[in-house]
Image 1 (cartoon, rainbow, N blue to C red):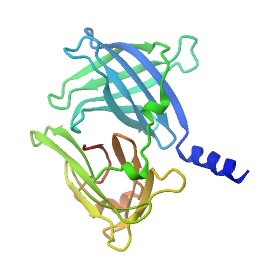
Image 2: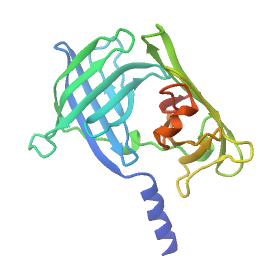
Image 3: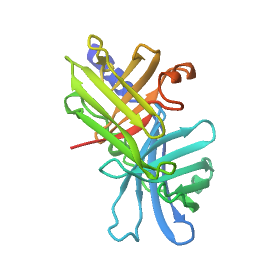
Length: 254
């Protein structure tokens, strides 16, 4: 009975799935596209986007989450961590017989700033492989370096961040973060206070008081990436440059 209780708690700690979606439509009037994703109760959405008429069609990783109460955002990530597309949209018709559809959706090219409307994005009723998308990492395979980059219109260059992790004992990690998309946010774990991975699943941690300035964040580990999210209030954002924080999706480097 004890084993069953622990197993059930471990399964719960993996984060429950809040929604599963599969859509098909076009970007603008001419670019056919398929989009699949699911979202967990940590507010992290993971899936893939597929362009059937691309020169070398292949699924592209998308990761994002909620935009407050309005809808969702998803960004396209290449294997080198570069972001090649950004989407925002609402989902309507969850209770419709034909399934949900995307409303007020826009796909934007971060380099050019050009946006395309997501048109006729209706559910195609395809099955979602939740375990493939919400593919959580195990402690022994957590990478040593994760990165991302995105075109910054103001600086006219690719900017982003990286995170480095190193073992600090059983289920413990030291970290060093440098994130500079607009302004610089830097921090690392205290020498005598490593991050401790959460119990049972060991694929996340929460860390408070970075750089002794009150800033806190969480790290959620997936096989291909880690998601960093601020957990402290706006009063701690003065720890870094204006508007800067650790937040982002950082792709695991091989």
